[in-house]
Amino acid sequence: MADYILAIDQGTTGTTALLIDAGLTVVGKANVEFPQHFPKPGWVEHDLNEIWNSVCKAVGMVLQHAKVNPAAIRAIGITNQRETTCLWHRDSEATPVGKAIVWQDRRTAPDCVRLKKRKGVEKSVKQKTGLLLDPYFSGTKLAWMLQHYTKARTLAQSGKIAFGTIESFLVYKMSGRHVTEPTNASRTMLMNLTTCQWDSDLLKLFKIPKTILPDIYPSAVEYGKTKGMAFLPDGIPIAGLVGDQQAALFGQACFKPGMAKATYGTGAFVLANIGAKPIYSKHKLLTSVAWKIGEKPTYCIEGSAFIAGAAVQWLRDQLQIIKRSGDVEALAREVGSSEGVLFVPALSGMGAPHWLPSATGLITGMTRGTTRAHIARATLEGVAFQIRELLEAMGKDLKKRIKPLKVDGGASLNDLLMQFQSDLLGVDVVRAQVAETTALGSALMAGLAIGMWSGLGEIEKKWKSDKRFAPKMDGATRKVRIQQWDRAMQAVKLLSES
Image (tube, rainbow, N blue to C red; front, side):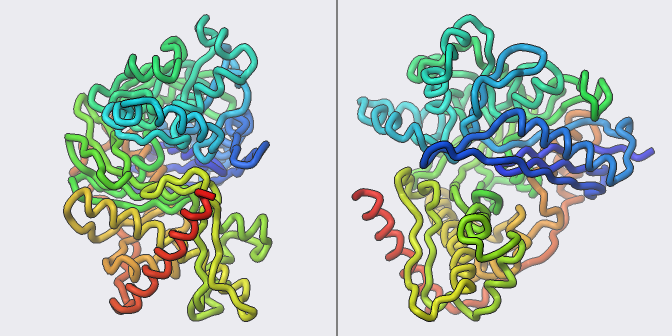
């Protein structure tokens, strides 16, 4: 009987379960979407019970479709949407304390502004965490929850509730253990980047009682074993935890400093391996733990665009100009160019390198001749423009041009987008054979923990690419397109300040 790793990729809009064998082949895949909740403008919430149900269904579906006996699963790896902030009761059901606040949520923007006005706070937070004071991260979200959810602070101080990001909640549901690891903890704004432990000064700043925090372990260890689940037998080790973007960096085999990847999901994220010592960005990028295997952490520098695939979902759900997200490429190909239409998809503010929480989306350059095809093409191009900005900032911080760029995620299967991305960057873009490198990364962590693979060298030899895109756009055209984007960004900034 073959051995498999079960990878659970708990994302922002759905949960994907994959079965991966020792040769890094995906032998089964299932995805289950779950609802998004938008109670107020700028607020984004998830129901933890709905997330858990999506996990149960996805795992059950992949085992059924792949016709795999659960006894063949040697370990489970979990990767997750980061920064999404969860509170639950320490009972057998892990009953949620209110809705989880999603990473896209901007409700704590005023709190961040107040903290920035306090002398030395912003500098101290960046030095300790590698992050900027922004509502993106978990710290201010958790502080808000403790203040606004009924009896949350009283329950927290008495140790009756637990905090965690999504992977922590899932492990608690699956094993009863309250744990996390450095890639997720480094995104909470509560962990010290150099010690990889919770920082007492930061807990005091955000008024977070330590009693609710999970224990921090390395990224590839056994955290617990399954018990009491209807869809999996007891005793399967949960052996790999890693935040989704770091998981993709690992799944892309970016094991050497300077190697970088871009993941195109709900948002778009560029990460570069920077080695054993953190580098603090001078261009508003973030520094995080890439992974921690054993006692030595590896660090990464990161730029995040909050809206990527979510812009296509917006075309589908709000504008209703496509029926399925996958229809966007065919629609965009109906025109040879966007003909001057430019879309800045700032639908949840803007992340790096601008950090404009109050920014809103902008479509410019429309005429009477503009069609839905032009808007579809401009939407894809808007994603690529954001990635170009992130890589430009990253190159300045690392003092080197990043090439090639490895890509993954659902939208990386869009050839039109990938070719335009290569054209804008002027470098090759290499798509991984396994598009689900986020899930693959967590599976690799779990496999390393149980000895399924001997080390990074063996994994690197097994990694394969799917397709390479080379730039076709001439330099003059590239320059004009970038200037158009820069002018649009100036307008977004002016509007966000008004």
